[in-house]
Length: 375
Image 1 (cartoon, rainbow, N blue to C red):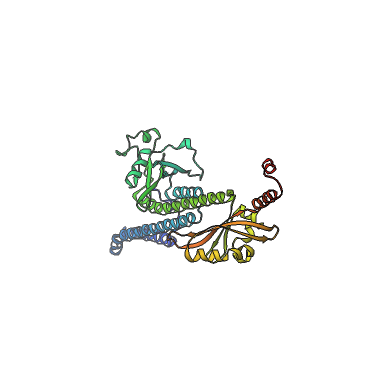
Image 2: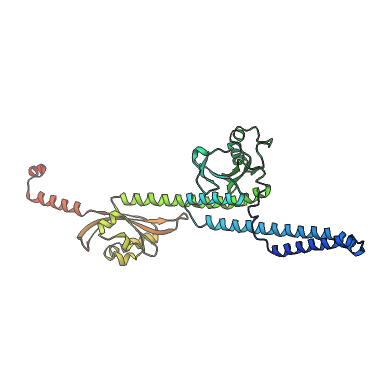
């Protein structure tokens, strides 16, 4: 195992070095006295190796504790890093860089299961220089990756060239693979992908401790990736919704149960001559008082009984437009439990249509049917 925290400062390291130097000096002095046959020197000489061994053991314990603290600090830093972004590409690249830092790997790859095909797809690949690896260089043991994805169990080999489990694999031979570490990504007992790290030069790089460390790390990573995917899905759905609302020719206004405007599409902006950026978040009664007063009984009715109102026509005078004819439909907005969370108001501008109808009726009054047919 390559301890990537071997350079970590060990608490008390200077004291240990001083003690070791002192014991060495004591050993030298005792050796000098032994030459004269001093009994005390002989007794001290017998006890000295035990003290030296104890000091060595203490130094090893302190170094192991310092290494463990370094690993925990790295894991904490990783959790902070991957929790600070919901951009999936950014999260994955950060994950790969941290894996290489943690394990001393030459390369690290992350593959996710495509929810539609069930196949593993490369989503991130980084090298020890924090650079993205080109697709043409994805030279890994796919058999190990598939085995981990299928079984959900991690795999570690210190030298795939000599490991009886893998030495006959074509990829291991062809790509000259040696140290390999591969662990699954799990979300609610479901394998969602794998993390694969390797080194094509060094043997004995990874140990079971590395495997356990990366497995712990992978649990955090899987949740972070799932959150990032969910964020992307929500953002995509919101973008689609916004595009749909923007393309609808009817005006759409949504208000919450407190009477605040939560959405106003482009058509509604045009009909009412108000910018969404100004009135979204404002109270319906304050932002659109004329429309609100006309629709107030209908809004209260929808809130109370939860039943929609279809094609209610009304005439009103709007600022910047004057007299307009509008047809409105109202329907409740419900959550997953069926509780009303707001109201959607759909507005159709009938002003021009009513103007043409009025002219047609006027023509019918003063012109003969034969003349009207030719118009």
